[in-house]
Image 1: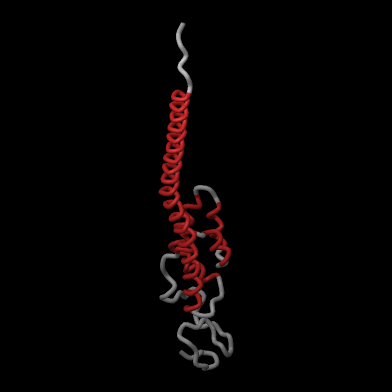
Image 2 (image 1 turned 180 degrees about the vertical axis):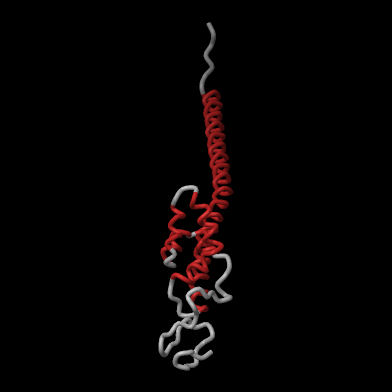
Amino acid sequence: MFCSACGTLQADTALSCPSCGRPTYGADFIPDGVKGWSWGAFFLNWIWAIGNRTYIGLLALIPYVGVIVAIWLGVKGREMAWKNKHWDSLEHFNRVQRRWSVWAVALCVVPLVLGILAAVAIPAYQSYVDRADEAERQQTVEASAQRVSAARVTAPVAQAS
């Protein structure tokens, strides 16, 4: 594609001409690769909103409203980020949004996995501790019984008078 102002050849996804700086797209134009669900905006809503200059996302901090705003950001967040921040190209935009999504999913999946592991490991460890305590008590009882029987064998029996 060529710049309409200076005629310089530029990438099809460039937002502005590298020579003269003239914007390639109109203010309301949204390229095909922008629309779609944003996991980063959904999970990390208010942080994502600040990072992408989409400050309406700060409404996610309001109790009860935050759930609705998070869903709305998931649906429309990519489009709002495209309009509110300067991007070098569509590839740059998608790369940044992909990073947000990876971090969001990682920050939600890692605690989930740790929670499942803890739910399995804590009862197993408690069972292990209980068995170890029972084995220790059993050894103590057996040792006491051996001492008592040894004391009976070696001690003279008292005669009743």
